Length: 168
Image (cartoon, rainbow, N blue to C red; front, side, top):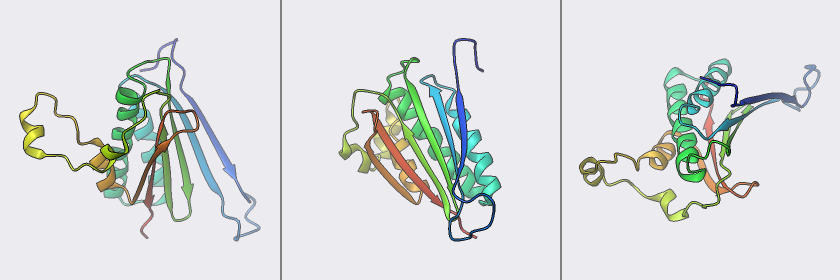
């Protein structure tokens, strides 16, 4: 639920030839979300991405995979990158292309992700015995998306770029 002190900005842009006169210059649809670092706002990103993916023709199981990956990426940005600081934003960019959807999730945190963490396979036995059942997010993202890349965001925080291909 949005309150008076919280702003969620959505920007939708069409770039390229939108008049249909040229097939060599396809239209890319870009949606940008600026979300507060507050748990629950990952749903805004999930719902937006889901709506876009359905419009693009993704199969329902691929839409569910996309929603899970985005939820994990935004939650990680809120919890680990921005450390629950609601004044910091999580920026989600959705770029619809002819062959798929590119999703970029960036935080404004000062703690950069350890690249070694981005390739760890979770130890199921260890996770099940811990009180904190976390530790699955990055692994899930890698399993559910076709391409995943972690880097430093232009803002100085962390960024994850995920691609899911449209299978027709």
